[in-house]
Length: 276
Image 1 (cartoon, one colour):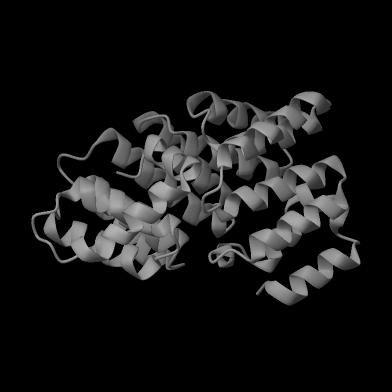
Image 2 (cartoon, helix red, strand yellow):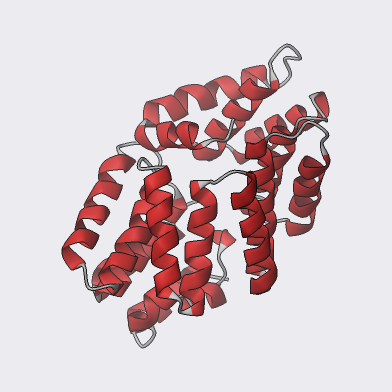
């Protein structure tokens, strides 16, 4: 299923992603495949950029096991993050939460997804409420990451640092969490510790496919450090990933990590070229 352990495997092993993604298409129509296996293969397909295959696998999982709270929560996240359909994602998350035998993990994942939808709409109080419900259901590194981002956007860097640290403590193999924490350490004047977190993050990435948010948050860290050229380079890498559309130009322009880049001609040119 879409859990932290599986995600860390995807980050660390490009060969695993490719092997599992290659197996996805062959098993999409196999009725004997379990829901858990379908969800694992869907996540592998996402990581390999095979989004049509991933969608089909998530859909099959929810149709074959309509009372699986895990299937609905994972499908909701796919619809939110990859399909960019917040209405359909909300329906899937709510369907997950309505399952009689829902798991704590699925509940936490669904509440976090609803919080992300509200945060995207700038409904910050509602988003925080959903994130708190997520943590109450089951603490997730992903939820702490979401809260870190939201508090950064609000300028509450102390709270952002607390949640970034919690995300790393919960999932030390998550490079995105480490990059978020690196930026907060830099803000707190702990530059050496921040550089070490940045180094560790990229050591975890390995040679496989790199998640778009790794590049984006690396750019954020470098922006906070004042390394404009490095931040621009990482942002360009982010824009060249298949799923950079989950962030709008306005969101990037107003990201506090890029405050030092706002007057940069290179930054504006990059946004003009790639963003929407």
